[in-house]
Length: 176
Image (cartoon, rainbow, N blue to C red; front, side, top):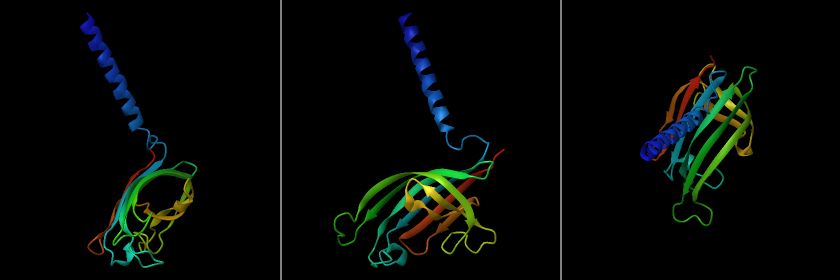
C-alpha cells in the first residue's frame, strides 16, 4: 500500500511539473490574438583589421560578439511592445587595459516600438517597401532607435570577410 501511495504521489508531482513547464512555454507570443515576431541574432567580430571590428573613434580593435533573442508584439490597436535577452563578450588583442574585455547579459523591456522604412546599414535597405523595427522606449535607452531588425520573415546574413559574421533570423506569426 505504501509503495502504491508513493508511486501515485510521484506521478502526481510529475504531472504538476509537466503542466507548469507547458504553461510557461506558451507564455511568449501570448496566444494568437496579435501579431508576433521572434528574432534570433548572432554577431561575431574577430578580425582586428576589418573596419566593422574597430572602434569608430579610436580605430582600435573591438573584438567579440553578441547574441540574443527579441520578440515584438503588435496588438489590434497598432501598438508594438516587446522584450529582448542579449548577451555579449569582448576580447582584447595585445592587452586592452581594465574593463576592455569580459561578458555581459541584458534583459530589455521594449515598452514602445513602431515599423518604419529600412535605412542604410539595415539588412533590407534598398528593398522596396522593406520595414524595420524602430524602438521608441525601452528599459535600456541604448536600445532606442533603428533596431535594424527586419519585419519581413527570413534569414539575413553577412559574412564580409573571414572573422566577421552577422546573422538575423526573423519568424512571424500573424494574429488569427
